Image (tube, rainbow, N blue to C red; front, side, top):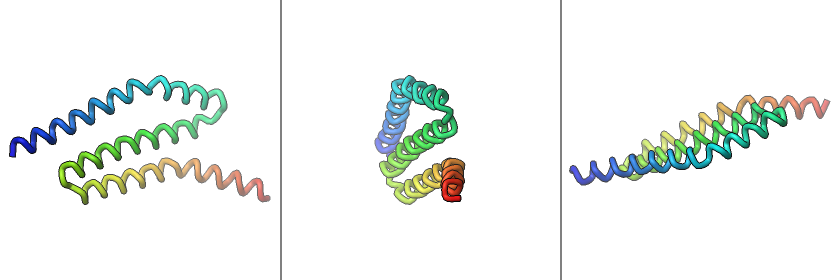
Length: 106
């Protein structure tokens, strides 16, 4: 029905507006974290952290929209894909940490 379509449109637009406001509000904090990571020589960790946080926020929002539309299986798929993507992004850091631990043990 048109009322349901209008509700979905309002929910999606509201979510996008809120995400945009949050991004604008916290862009300064992201810049600060990026600068700190650069100064400490840990830029790789900062990039992974910021990318993972962004993916988590987007996946959570999309999953909520899917659930609101009654698409629970789609929501679960989106959330699983997001978790796998975060894991893939973190693989470089995990590999680096395991290598460091191996060096400590030898």
